[in-house]
Length: 445
Image (cartoon, rainbow, N blue to C red):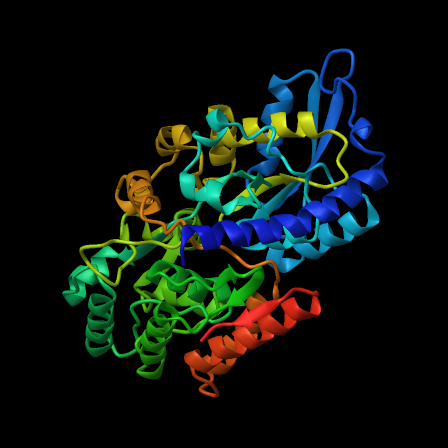
């Protein structure tokens, strides 16, 4: 799809949000409802902040320690998939949402299209934007307006047991063809062992694989949405993973389940198809395997053209009813660009999140202990992988795609449905959901 098509898509989402934002402004009494001279000695303010990411309390504490006129009141909430988003939605409906919200990239368009967030374009100047990885700015821009500040990027990465790869004579796979060959070698050498896991319980796992291959599920044409989960890239990815599942070459254990973690501990799962943030998660699950793991770029479809999608990643946004926009933005930009912020987060949580602010990458690199991975330069790997993220992928403004694909993938691993059939069903459900919301929609192939 052309760049014009993506601008149209962002314009369509932005138009819906603009209408809702006007209504919200009218309801709140207009621009004058903003706190006067907020965050000054004469008018100190407290900004409320909800998030689930590890280290957020310590980040808020560090901000409070170093700032006098703006203070932050932090509340930890469940992760988005475990109830955080319903809590946020209910608070927005009741008019009691906090000033600052943590929202993952896949869910941002949904909140924007509902008119739930403040337009922060006035604060996202060219000098501010250039501090961040360009792809993350693209993902937070809709209707030529900025709706959130990127927190981290999450390029795909493959983590693997270096010692067991050597034991079984396996070469780290550079391509998906190599990956299948390696999976066959593993199963032949140790019949109960698998190279990695296809996480059927996490729809973003498959979506990110499609993103990496060049898929574009959402676009617009002549003022209407177009949903296409049957594009050539998605079909290629679906056929590949269908074959891997059918031939028993990968595990299908749910992510972070006892089955999955026990297989890591027993050495019967040799690799983890994850993201930058996954390094800290993995080290926390099997700390006794320190020094046995390594990391490499995600296998690509073409060895000469490395590519990556982005698995989750988060942003900071301001709720529509906040009357402390200026103070909230000061906190958000400090949280996203300050070395003190990343140090507080990393020290508190051993997080391996990859900062979207490029100047913070050396800070994170220095703060993280990578001895679990043999002292490897993880952040050098993340930088190279992040540079290959396709900037043209956009998430749709409805949860229907995620919810339907989640249910469909369960049928795939049980043998009741094919992956191609699962994404086709996902497309129909997404189209229906958008039409019910009053939008004009066209189906792709």
